[in-house]
Length: 443
Ligand SMILES: *[C@@H]1O[C@H](CO)[C@@H](O)[C@H](O)[C@H]1NC(C)=O
Ligand SMILES: *[C@@H]1O[C@H](CO)[C@@H](O)[C@H](O)[C@H]1NC(C)=O
Ligand SMILES: *[C@@H]1O[C@H](CO)[C@@H](O)[C@H](O)[C@H]1NC(C)=O
Ligand SMILES: *[C@@H]1O[C@H](CO)[C@@H](O)[C@H](O)[C@H]1NC(C)=O
Image 1 (cartoon, rainbow, N blue to C red):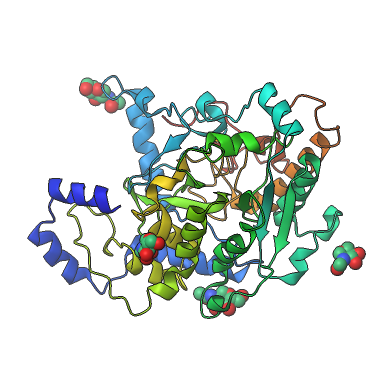
Image 2 (image 1 turned 180 degrees about the vertical axis):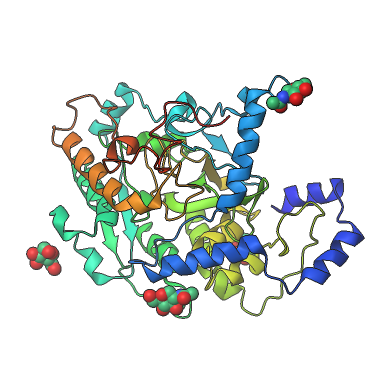
């Protein structure tokens, strides 16, 4: 953010009147932030796991933006929407975002499974190569509960929302990867006095010493092309190339966006799926992430000027001013990763950033979807159906893994739209834009 914000500040200097206005509003809560925190509190009441937190949305704002997009779509000779269709899987860390979160469905031509550039389709030759010479990959699913260390093979022993954990375990066995679920082996004293979501970087720090590669995933993720191996994903991210600088990969955040600007509380990248390559640089980056709050103690961060176009009432944050807030508040370790690693000049060039759903993260990802706990609109993604979807996806994935590795169509995919509950009322809004309509997502 340092560069981009700097550049934008030069272009659009913060005007004195904007600053005065901000001072006047200083005590008022930012409605967007307030809404976000209220949602977080409401979710907390029914939460089963502290690591199950998700992006933030303002449904009203998304609705208005969608109406605008449909309007422009109908009359779009000047604004060419095809310029918004991603032609590669990758993006960079910045403060910009899509006000309408993309992908908005499995048919969204911009991102996710709807865009051929986003599909995970490694060649059969590569798959055979890695089946013969597998890499030392560990699938890691952090938790704060000892009971999660014992992942039962019986689906009925699982809370439905987290059946993805059992899918991951079967997937690990199917391809021969190591698998870890539960709390870190060693205790992490720094965790006392932080939100429990911070367990994640501590667990990664321990396991990257044991394995060449880690994929660390949240309990509400799953893998929906389970016959495909993971090595080509690490290779695409640049983590398998001996000479490349990349040691970490994540996907961009889905949502947490206001008027095209990323929320300073969420950061630009999502930590629900993190790929790590064993290396001294990765160890330093993970330490920077985990010890950020400890190192920031007593550091007074320089305030950053608020650009005139800034859509949030609160100031932008940078470095310790972001990290310190995340010790107890959303987005916890995620904003820490952003400030300490992804947006840190020391590590920025070592982090690969996938676009959302391209092919990982967001509900409509082609390969590794994230059934996040927040939604821009239930017409696209209804969070009340997460349990049913997770159960049905697990059944579908298990079936695909019943055949022996190497048999059957390797690219077969279990789609979210096929995993919805049955019997919608024709006037129900749920999924009407994403799965129950045959029109495309708004352009
Ligand atoms: C969320 O719930 C946990 C226990 O379930 C509680 O300890 C914590 O204080 C709650 N957080 C907030 C912000 O209410
Ligand atoms: C489409 O564009 C034309 C010319 O710019 C304008 O007159 C018309 O009102 C627009 N219609 C819509 C639906 O935006
Ligand atoms: C793990 O869970 C299964 C089924 O819930 C149980 O039978 C088994 O004893 C447990 N194993 C350990 C080591 O706790
Ligand atoms: C950025 O990385 C350097 C090198 O590890 C570290 O000293 C610094 O504290 C990091 N900055 C933040 C804000 O975490």
